[in-house]
Length: 106
Image (cartoon, rainbow, N blue to C red; front, side, top):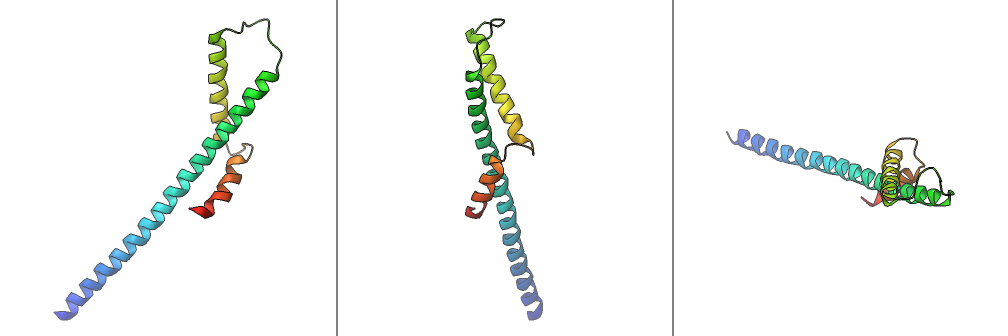
């Protein structure tokens, strides 16, 4: 009977150790996922800023007026475009660079 108690305690200890290890792995995966999302978000902000600057460099268009509604639409379009560009694997590489640099700190 004493051996059974020892085996049960050993099994519980091993189970606890395995749970801690797997939760650590899951936590690391979650942190990596959050870091990837943050890097993609930063790239989206960067791309949006770049698109706005490019749009400002264009001459005015006589066909479409520069109303507040049109400016809001252009801003929303630019933001959507930047978000979609940052989600692709063929983005400009800012998110990948940031991820490689910051991965060691998590």
